[in-house]
Image (cartoon, rainbow, N blue to C red; front, side):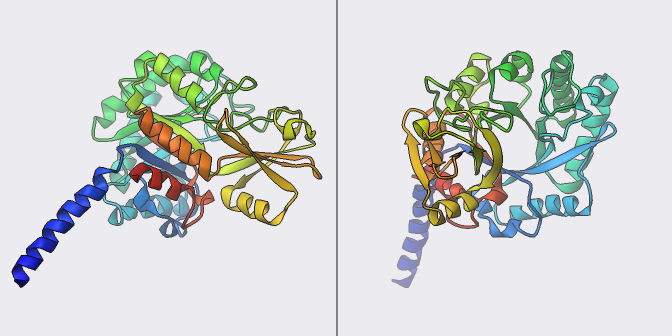
Length: 363
């Protein structure tokens, strides 16, 4: 009898496990991370498919992780595979302000070849799984003062080709793509790069940004009559450019953006103002709960929240639990590759936005 019970329990566990994970969608959940190595253990990395070290940089024409603390963070990320055997650890180059010499370095075949070789060396050395290129931006203006030239467009495609030739198919290659029209039309040779990459990480956030003088939603799911840039717009544009749906990763923001000197008309939405600062979702929700002058609004066209403080003339655009849930469901319904976010250290250690993504993914 005991043996029968034991066998029954085993069978139940097998089929119970299968039943639970059969509901788990195949979307990728990708976290950029720029925090310290010590804090990594406190986040639910079991709910990720990828974690991206942010950021490595160029040292001459080679990829360089950086100082001892940076190397410790990469090593810690790789050790997290002990908690999540399916986790992929990706090294990212650049970031906003982190690709000053990219245009010049990647302008020659020799430099591209040396760079690709250095990437392979580091991936093997630390046990990482791929490279994410966050060059902001090839061929068009990005970070103030950084050089760019029209030839970057072709050079970027050549860089991806030599990376694929060097890394083979054992390692992943992705890149962070601007979610705005000029980038889509002028920065990338989409038809050439689409077969070479695993994912395009669409930066469908900061769609209003630090240089914007009119407020709006910085990461809306859908376009509105007053703002055409959105997650959905970016996805449709990438599909139009020939990027396979399964290679498209949409972006979510684990932070908000504040504007000051914003009039009360339309509760501050689409009004003139001056960018003030960014804040993590943790700090934002604390602010909402403690300062009753901030009023919450929901734009049902954009599927995006925003806040307005009439007394201080402050406007805030951000992602909350509702918008994150809708974005995750959008990724599932549209059968695209998944969802990524900037960035993990801005979230709660437990009960945060990553937990929302995971819940929707598994329902």
